Image (tube, rainbow, N blue to C red; front, side, top):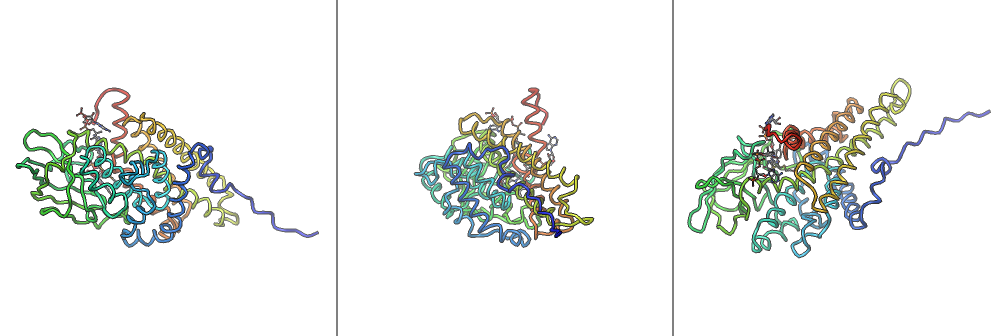
Length: 400
Ligand code: TGC
Ligand code: FAD
């Protein structure tokens, strides 16, 4: 009698695990096409290099134009302004695919699309839209969004950057900190307080203007493949035509709704990348004479990861459809941003653990994603801020 080794058990495919509840069938053909083209780009052009970029703190300078060629910058905007007139669900899907590669790459897309193109489209004059949107869509121009300051982060209502009217111009002075793409930007959306009436106003500021400077923050242990800068504005004069037609904190906060929505999708990509890496690793890693995958506690960890990511995917999908129908409230967006970041961060930490010592190297993605997600949990409203937004929604009491 001959004996042969038992057939290796076949687990579910990564395609099945990424779509455990069959959401794929609910996307339109166009949404699937956008998703698949971004998926191919990320797997072919980003994943092979991103570990090195991250380790060396390098942002791939050709990426903005490559994203522009893919047609994904400002994808929800009308075609005549460089967009694709795509749904917000498509925008969510492409964020998820990009963040499967790296949160820093997704950050670039979020800022360009949600925090720069969105306010120019929503609050800018026709002339500002024509001047900036096509170049931002093609990646020829890069934008940044300056809200946070050294002493005003979670509480942007306390920002100190000031503006004053001088004839046909406005003169802006102040410091912005933690600004994604800051030193690469051709244009900055800057939020400042009017010295006369205390109103917060937004401006489209060309970064070549006299008095504008940007210095990169080099000591990051997170988001290392993304550019983060401090902006200095020293009596920068811009024409009144560059002022956005929105007043008060609701101006910048309405931009944040767009970006937070994208993040709620994006982090699922990072989570799935870590989950798939862990599933593959435990299959091949022997411990105590058997594959790690055969251990009950390991399976429990994987089951928790799948459950969290599947629930997050359902949340993102439904929020996408609500947004496409104009029914996304800020509190709904806060819940999805908060909980999907929590889910992705939990998965990344658990995956890193399952990889043992290998899990601390950038030869694997888990620790890179895990450290990036620490930033994602902080920016666009910290976990605490979103908890307090939900608390206010539930009780009516403002507990900030
Ligand atoms: P509050 O009194 O609540 O509101 C002031 C005015 O704003 C309106 N509003 C909103 N409007 C639109 N969307 C929202 N989500 C809004 N939330 C509030 C509100 O109706 C009111 O309007 P009006 O006309 O009555 O004056 O303001 P508050 O000072 O109590 O602050 C509220 C709080 C804490 C929720 C807000 O300040 C906040 O969200 N803080 C977090 C700050 C934040 O998220 N910063 C992000 C900076 S940008 C960034 O991180 C980019 S990362 C990019 C990347 O790389 O991906
Ligand atoms: P703080 O506001 O000082 O918060 C510190 C701690 O206090 C946090 O734990 C917070 O949750 C907690 N806290 C705050 N308020 C309360 C409260 N009421 N009760 C209990 N706890 C509270 N900003 C931009 O404008 N543009 C950008 O492009 C941008 N990109 C970024 C990129 C990176 C890599 C990073 C790290 C940040 C970026 N930010 C950007 C800034 C980001 O939005 C802020 O860091 C964030 O809003 C938190 O502000 P803070 O860092 O000042 O922290």
